[in-house]
Image (cartoon, rainbow, N blue to C red; front, side, top):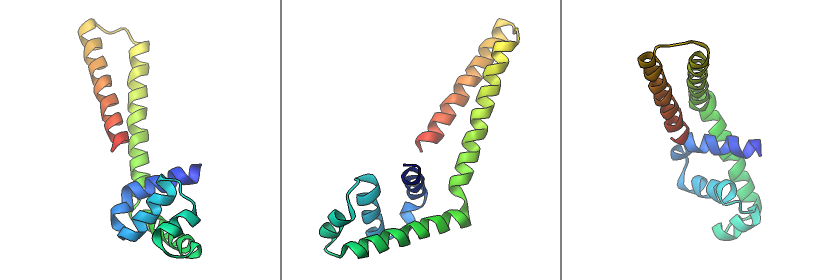
Length: 122
């Protein structure tokens, strides 16, 4: 399951760099959960050809990540934002602030949370 999620994330970032055929086969297998045999029937080629195409595509996607590192950068930025959110939430529970300051900090916390959600959705 973890591999499927990892491959889906790589495809989200680098999918537009794939050929149409690679994207279609990738989508059939990883998004629509079709078997290699089912994809082969749809594409009119052998099951082995589909297997080979998926392996090549996987290698291509991993190569893009190795060179560009966009997925790792995304994860690092998301982790850092979550850490900021957690630290601010912890600060709000520990310190006694005047109401205007507390309201301002809570507003900042809400905005950070919104940014994290936007990043996660993109």
